[in-house]
Image (cartoon, rainbow, N blue to C red):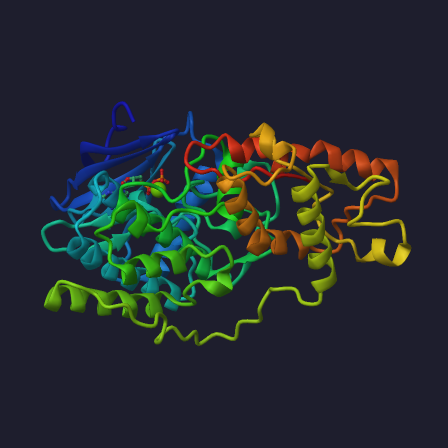
Length: 434
Ligand SMILES: Nc1ncnc2c1ncn2[C@@H]1O[C@H](COP(=O)(O)OP(=O)(O)O)[C@@H](O)[C@H]1O
Ligand SMILES: [Mg+2]
């Protein structure tokens, strides 16, 4: 906002953040000198969805009315500009505290509070859907933590994300959960926020993101299928128990994560107490208090053992021979037999040997093929299993040429190029085409 409109009842001070069509300022309310934060939309450059998000942020924040969420005070319109007026608690975003690995005591202090704040939101039936360091405010003086930016928050207990182009995915790509990519056939629920917290905690502890990527498709692939180094492997000072908590949060499958932010908070508190009293943390069984009061019907599909075995068998053959297998006449995953073809539900239509190394491409088991071996291990579970449990409508053996054409078009989605170009990992040498 270049200059405030006339009769604007706030005096604008420091610019906190500026984005496309949105700016956040510290300000003072002229009537009583009360410090506030203003989030202002510029009608010339904001998009219709920014308006919706601002309204949603105001309404959700108002109804939540909890001390651990930034309190919205008013939604005001001046001269065509919409401004969300929020309390100013003097806090700064957590992303400004990131860089070098955080000291364990400080990490645990903040992490306990963040988990408590997220638990407050979840207990009121809201899923934030955009948790990341920039949306977590920390007051360095009081230690108080508040969650900001409820623009994407949802009151639906479970929300289905349709597959759509990567650039249209809502949320922040480095922090979204696998199910938020829309490529998992899994609903988004409060456990999606816990994955995002896992990414945030990983970054606090190591100064790095668990997965690195350079474009949207690489982020999507990374969240769904790529392994990451344990925080304690990156920073040896990270206690094993803390590393295991973060790894649990980052599980690809929601069922394998913490089920509640409250359960997470209990484990973090235990770590904090042990660290404060003894300066060390003995490993303990995680999730003892992690009991969800909600009836969760697992979204896992059962009864695909045969297909999974067929896929793993094909994978082994490609590994041994180096010859690709595809959904054409030579496809051994989906033979011509109608009964078997009916069972073929995987999105994988071909498995080929890696293209990143000529040795691997020939499928030889060489002493130097550790990254391929590692990938082979990773592919055995859970990603390959995930692919094998894709819904039945995605047939990998098309019955018409038209269906084949559709498949070819989306081939790049899982190409080895996306995986193997990452500087951070050696994973993904196998080409999965859909
Ligand atoms: N009440 C607040 N106090 C301090 N900083 C804030 C406050 N609200 C937002 N911010 C800062 O402004 C940034 C942008 O605000 P946010 O509401 O997240 O907008 P956007 O929708 O553009 O992400 C946040 O990442 C945070 O750093
Ligand atoms: Mg934000």
